[in-house]
Length: 293
Image (cartoon, rainbow, N blue to C red; front, side, top):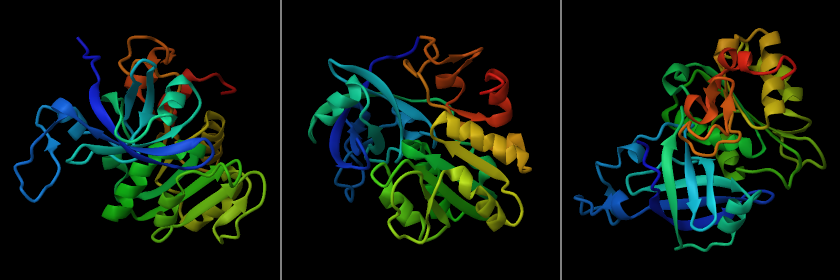
């Protein structure tokens, strides 16, 4: 039987990150932590029984519980460390997130997870990798890019990010950090540019001819996350450009409610987004979509 009892977490801090979005840091509490055996550590570390939180895969998600309000799924932008700290980007767009935005550091919430299937990190390591994120959809890709940049475990790595406007841009510190090591293309659909040399007018797909030319050969792997219309259009474009459909992965985070494949909210034919995904390969996902997507 599934355990639906959330682990207690503390809201540690937050900062605004784009239009109606905040980047939150949480810390696992109660039974999830114990005194450290290492006197050099000033904070408790995760206990062995919390193997789920210790083994979070990049691209998995958790259910955040705001007491008295409800639950909602969020992806990790920073995996739980040994002290139980983790981060998530949250956009205010419902009862749970509105209640969360009204809380202050130190308040206690709940979390269940981790759930779902993450990005295929072993399969993409050492390859030519294109990462495309739109809006807050870049959040599931933060852990991927951070890991690859930190490990320098790629032949070529390029990030393309799209936002509706300057005000809607999110995860600015992350992209500014990455562009010290890899090419980052920032696409602004409406309004003025900020003058940065790597910022362009248009959608991510508009810069794709330039990006693909920069690879020389086509990328071995493409990771997509963001609005579905952007991801599906980008996948079709890349396949038409010669990228194999089995080399394209998408994060489909829609209508997830229980995280356990039991409530049926995220049912997609005979697949559940929350348990069979949220990460899908394009050739696997396509048969479950309408022909016009």
